[in-house]
Length: 371
Image 1 (spheres, helix red, strand yellow):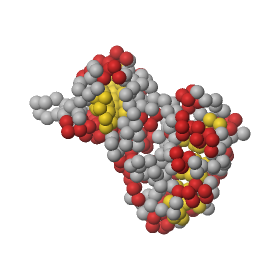
Image 2 (image 1 turned 90 degrees about the vertical axis):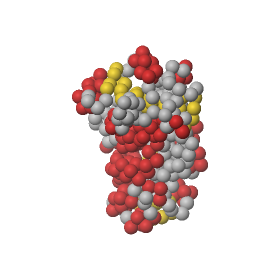
Image 3 (image 1 turned 120 degrees about the horizontal axis):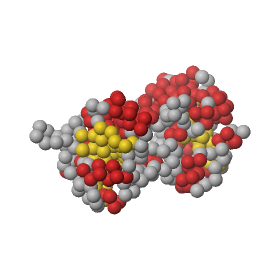
Image 4 (image 1 turned 90 degrees about the horizontal axis):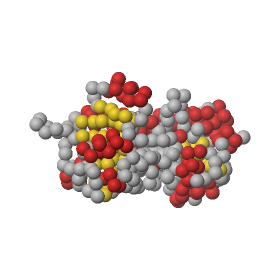
């Protein structure tokens, strides 16, 4: 199979979809790895690193899309890239279709087969290709939140860990999954007073057993949320419903109850965001003010630490990429129901129910699609 890896073109996206090590593994199995010139530079990988692994360096994205059987990326294809997708071509990347009707319709029109990293599952009920970036984004969230909290950036001017005689920042983490757990660990490590909200009692028990002395947790209700955000210096939104639009957990009206200069960090912005006032931003212009509350809603947070993110993502995606190349997508999905869960689009049909529900579109079952 010809596996193509174009340069990411989303603003300030420095990651790359295939590492030199992954390219080398593919070449060793008899596949061709086609990497666009300069694709890995943002993550610290030179063209020479790829050629040493046996990959071919291709000048343009147009050549990659025209030649490759499978396109491997990081971020969802942008409008210009979607025009280059073709019938029968395989796309393997993050898609986040539920809040993005334009991308969804373009993918359906292209006739391609699209497998989304964020909906591939594992036998423990996890999302193994989303987890590495969730870990990165979770650990980044308190870091970028602390920066936003500085007075010069519009925040309250509160130091995360306080100092002797002055209390620490109060941080509320909404969601106790991968993102929330990592966010809470880092925020607590910075000295903040941290409370995690979640609706899973088993998850709360786990967090209490493992991190009981590090941060607090509380069962999530509307009342508990309203009470905690009134006193919060920072709220980190970390709630995910696989493949679906994120639920709105804080309304615009509630911003008036918060402290002026408090910070909202929305890690769920790829899925539409979990605050009513959230809108996607970029690393070039990451924050904005709504009613005196600072919002940090960068849609590709892990892109800021591109090398760490690229290697972590590559470690997770490589086995699936190789299975798709070795067997073809249909047989790979027949052999692995967890990979089949990643199938979102095939030959003009939507194949993921949560996306169909979010966008009001008809859905074909993925099992029928592979037949």
